[in-house]
Amino acid sequence: MLSTRTRSALLVTALSVAALALQAGTADAAKKSGQPSKRDAMIEQCIAKAHAEAPVVVADASGNRRTEIYKNCMVQAGMRP
Image (cartoon, rainbow, N blue to C red; front, side, top):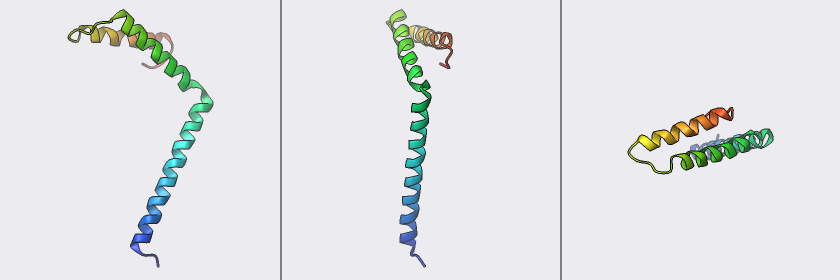
C-alpha cells in the first residue's frame, strides 16, 4: 500500500497536469476562434475613444462619462462592454 506522502505527491502531480492541460486547451480554442484578438482590438479602440472624448476625470462626472462612451462604443461594435 502507498504511504500518505506518496499519495499526496501523486495527487498534487495529477492536479497540476490536469490544470495545465485545461489551460492549454482553453488557449488553443481562443487562438482558433480569432474572436479574442478582434475583441481586444475593439477594447483598445473604445478605451482610446473614451479617453479622447473625456480626457480629464473630475469627481465621478468625467469617470461616468468615460464609462458611458466606452459602453456605447462596444455595443455599437456588437460586443459586450
